[in-house]
Image (tube, rainbow over all chains, first blue to last red; front, side, top):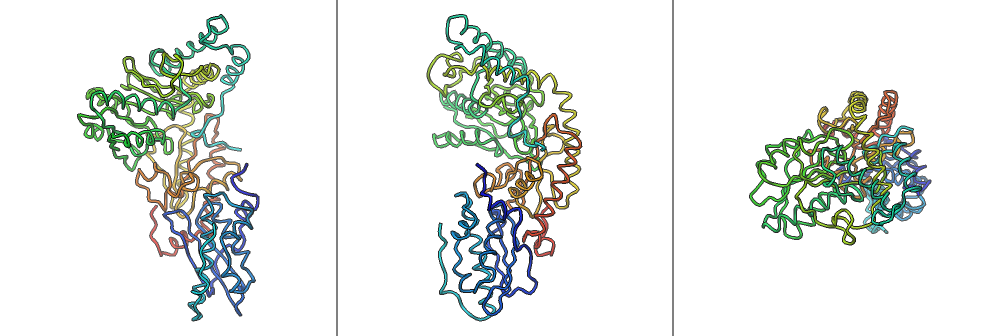
Length: 136
Length: 394
């Protein structure tokens, strides 16, 4: 059996939404180099809709694939929907991740949330009411 | 496809395969049986023992066949620990970048009341004999230092360390899994009391190796049972595996000088090519290293991604990144030589073989260069480094 599902390998080999949004109005960065994973999300939100999303990731194959899938799952969605993104949804959309790689999907969820919170901060709204705990 | 992971395992030599297959077909008797068919297997086993002993300058009675390097390491360490305990000596000297077969065996002994000191591994991946000498105590029962490191390939000053141990009357074991069959090893000249080796690292089969232990050292028993291996290792002997190991070792030793010269040239070509990649660094001394080992760190990228993309480009290699080990920490070897986590995650080990060509080396360099550049292209760390938000480490 291969290390990763075909979906993971596809998103790893051809990551969607890679890059930077120069005029992003929500940016979030999570993880640290010590642990070997950093994800940075850039959001362009207009009329409460995520018009564009891009990411940069330093990390393993599943970290890159999780970032890519997470951006796909929130692109074009209302902010409220994006706030509900779970790591489980990311992992499931990738046809699963090895157990010891589940933290990559958690990181993707956290990166999206962090960018959304940054957007809320910039626009003066709070999103503390929508805090969630990651699902395994 | 370019296979550059020979430190993980090697392809069996055709002669070793031939030996193994023909023995499985023709000499499948039990060496402990008295009838001729069993005794033929015994004869083959003892011939192999002699050949292996000769290859490392030992006597055939000093060789114990094992299931591989890990078992040999465990048996050697247990042996020294048992001898030490009888004399009230429960201190062991080793290094931080040993193979886990050694480090984990030592951890177990620590839980049993032994004290372990790890001598410093310097930035160049080398241990200093004088520092070993200074760390030996009255109650030291064992010094165990690997012959050549499995990740960064640095060759340790084993002869000097062996001489010091002999003078001080302390048992000296070396995990020579990466060295045997690749560089000259002579247990006499190197003053080695115990040595571990594994067949599949020198084109022999997996699941077989040996422990050399100098005459007069009572080897402790890991596997209890029958009287095989003079009572030092129970279990019906893996005759085809052992004979194939002997065949592979004879072959490796016969070709050693030529192979080493050729591989060293390819290795240095690789090192030169990879050094041209900005913000990269060779891990371990450039000269005192195995002919086949190249190990680099590339700043701003993570090793597993690099390996997977290299695999797509037909290059099979290995990394000391956390993600390839299943833990959060990168290679203990790279940390031991002082690489910080950030950089250690971006490591690549290429271990070439006798059949790796200069063209292969150039193709590897090009594949690595492209992949590192691609991954840096969307690495937030690389962005921070290149925009001056963080200082470069390499």
